[in-house]
Length: 335
Image 1 (cartoon, rainbow, N blue to C red):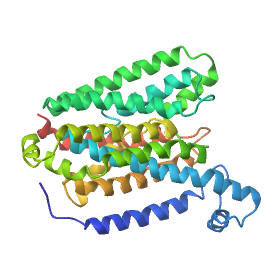
Image 2: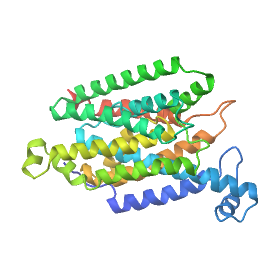
Image 3: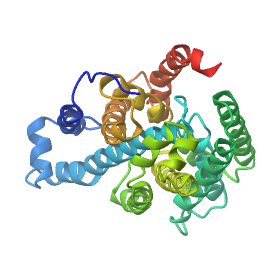
Image 4: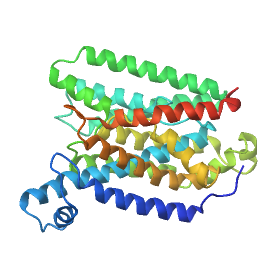
């Protein structure tokens, strides 16, 4: 099903790219030490004083890059899952993938493996994400209703949350518990190129897995039987999307914690502007997800009383009302 475009896909992509560059530039100004535009630019090329160069190149720049990558992953994954499950409420957070990834990361932190082998943190998150997504795909293969899939997601999220609470209850010392809480609340604070290097291979592997899946999602939107007659291997398509989203989302959770609602909101915003075809909204969803997370990360740097906002908290405050609006808007199709 399609509709007249409010804006052309090319125009939307260009506008989003320009907005990302502009917001990324302003994101470099804010932090514990605020910078001017001139200081930030000089720091980028290494022409500022030593302290400013370190702040810009070693702290601000990797944080900005991670915000863009994590937002793109979440937006793209949400669009993929909504197309795969034919479910307008699907996203890695609502369907329990992010919570399960958090459980995997928290278990690794509990075991004390982060200082010994940092690779195990994203591995644990990826494992948790793959288990949750595989369960949802198994349900979708049985042609279950949208309501059943959502309830399954709620069940997976609740089970993962219970597991996280159990692990936190037995945390060996306060520092371990604090690290777990940081993952749960979500943050890009103090991230470095080391975190980027940890996450990037898994994100790239996930992108390779889902490359070219858009055409199959278009066919699947017409129904499973129609997709089969068009030559789509549904089992292979589901496996690619499961593995790809799990790898990428697991890596995102590993470096930024659990960040909800990005993958839910962004595809709806994109569909309101261009099209309902799953393939056509994938790339714009990635760009808009990057923009949304960049803006949210800037909000976390603003002073709020004596405390500091966390990225997951900001997205929850923004995303929960949007989620309720989407439920209200799509209530007829869920009956």
